[in-house]
Length: 149
Image 1: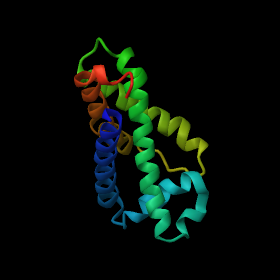
Image 2: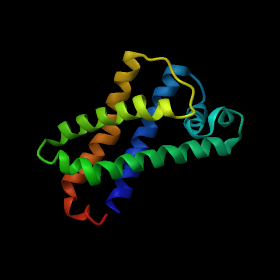
Image 3: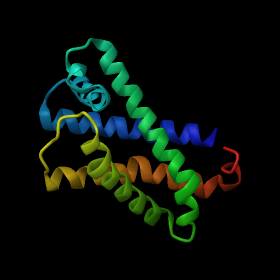
Image 4: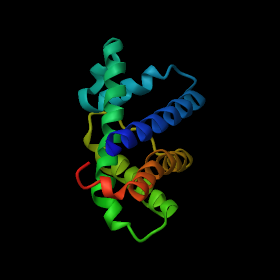
């Protein structure tokens, strides 16, 4: 249960941050953001589909957040057990950004985006706060619940 709750918290924090950043930078409807997420799996057809493509993007977003949560709570919490909560969050947020941007997105069907150092830094900070902190907090405060989830 800790894994699911932590994944939902992390996914929701990341979703709100992503939507706010998307709106502030592009001034476009956030449904486009979720279509982009869907396009990673389905390709350009995600942009011509209906509302189901947006909903699928939201589902993919939460699935990805849950996967990162499971990875942290099952592996990284043991590797980073001797470091402070904030240090764990920073390390994991950076790790998630690197894997998503240098491995997952290039291997996906999503159209590549141009690199921007400022945008990358903002996204790293978002991942530290939205994914790293909830995972590190859950691992620190509920360690006995984790082996059996």
